[in-house]
Amino acid sequence: MKTIKYLLIGAMLTVSTGMSAQTADYQPQLNAIYKVLKENPGKPDAAKNLVKAYEKAYKKDPAALVALGYGFLSENHLDKAKYYADLVLKKNKTCGDAYVLLGDIEQQKEEGGQAAMWYKNAMSMDPKNPNGYIKYANIYRKDPATFDDTMNKLKKEVPSYPIEAESGHSYFIINDYKSAYNYYSKSNQNTNDEQQTYEYAQAAYFTGNADKALEVAQKGISRFPNSNVEKALTRYALYSAVDLGKYTDAEKYANFMERSDMDLIYNDFQNIGKVYLAEKKYNEAIERFNKALEKKDDAYLNYQLLSEAYAGLGEEDQAISFAEKYLSLASSVKVSDFTKLADIYSQKAVEAQKAEDGNVDLYMEKSMGVFDRMIEKFPQLKTYGILQQGNVAFKLNNNALAQSKWLAVIDLLQDKSDRTAREVTDLTSAYRQLGALLWADKDKGIKAAAPYLDRLVELDPEDNIAKRYLEAISK
Image (cartoon, rainbow, N blue to C red; front, side):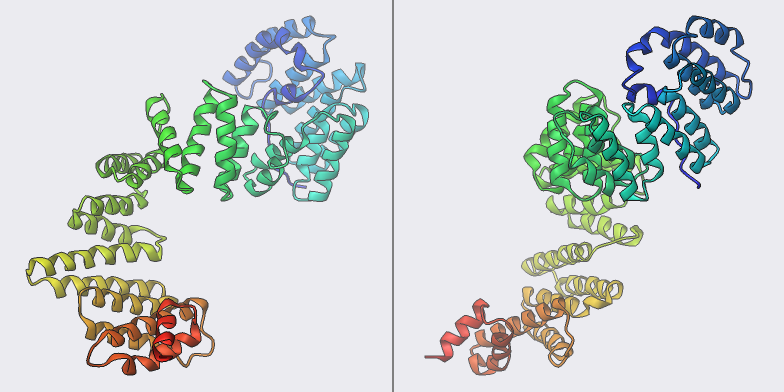
């Protein structure tokens, strides 16, 4: 069975309940051996003298010998690693970590079945040692029943062991954030260590649970002040707070990050810029969005955000330039990206109308043209785009054009039997807008509006215009 190779030198030492207390005694000599082996790839005897002295000093210490085996395994000297596992087991058949080392050797060879056998031996011979259970469960991550059964066996043997957090970590390291989040959500946040807390927050954020990510990050920041994990958690606190629109909290985290010695990435600057954008501090927002682009020049969302910031400053030409750049370069754009650009053009049309500079029709056509492009990109939203074109015309007092657009929506949808929810909304809006327009026309009035308002009543009797219409015709 092909499995994912994973090996962290000494990782089993930090997990094992039986060895960690002795680690400090032999770690300096062990580190010296690791260093020589790493500097001499392919040469298992490079640290021969150091190894000989180490063996002599710790020949009765199984933890030290297993750790030495991991040093050789880290440089792919499998025979040497196996030698030390076997050496330990000759003297101590119940040393679970020696069986785990043998399993990890098989993992290195991508022999998952053999690895599982050794991990099972560890569970049997050393039932209070978590390492065998964890490694065995990891092999069967794709079989949730076996994974959970194994971890529950560990819980039975060691009731205090935090299997929920360990399970979350197991899935986190293979980027299965959904499973990691599900397990971490059952863990005890008050006892999770720094790494587990960070993983929980990140898994929550990556799975779209921004509220939980913010909660976990805030708790972690409180539990681990003045630490590296505090900085990492602050990042996800910022992202989550921005996503949730909690800009007071987000500003606090943004200020912390910019004052700290953190190496800020493009997404940091982008989110900090979003905070300033929400607070209408447009120049500050523009500065951060530009910094984000310096970090990652193809982070195209920043062009849209720059467009919004310049629009906020009233610099429509700059706003249009960045919005057009975004739409031309971004691989995944949203309907709202088109509507924002259309709004800028329509605002310029309004300003031109006030200034009587003769460019009203030009900007109105550009605004409507954006909706044509939107329809091309999202053909399923054709009637929505036409409806919005009518709204633009109405905003600019071109009632005839507005009426023609709303009638076009009605013609496309009124006899359609399989209307989508979106189309029902579009048709309802068209009846409302057209009915209200005709009703307000002193030359046409309620009689001309009636055919459309009657249909509005059928579709949405709770609509305010529909209620006013019913009240008017009942008198």
